[in-house]
Length: 109
Image (cartoon, rainbow, N blue to C red; front, side, top):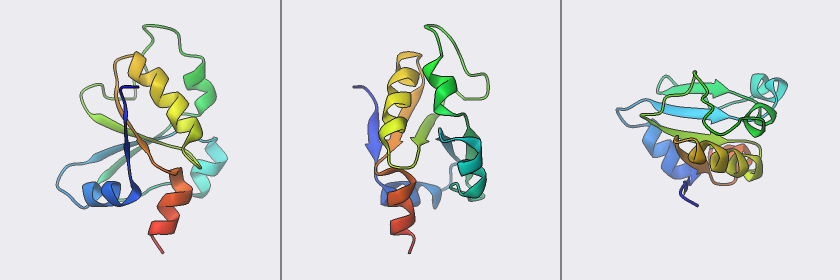
């Protein structure tokens, strides 16, 4: 496993920093539309996990940058981990938001 996990607090600190943070939300579009991590410092992508699961070796997602760390998230973190494993294998620099958006919301209260 080459990808790391990032806690909601670490992500919050990163978003508060100078650099833009790339977040990939792998939930279904309806869920993403209802709620996702938003900030002027966040570049947010929504690519449902079903699309990522279908990627073949050597495939690329043109929307995603390969030269930046991408924080992958879902509701609880399980799907994000599976997607991170696939993306890591395709040469993307990925981190998984620990506990997913459920944990993120908890820390935001």
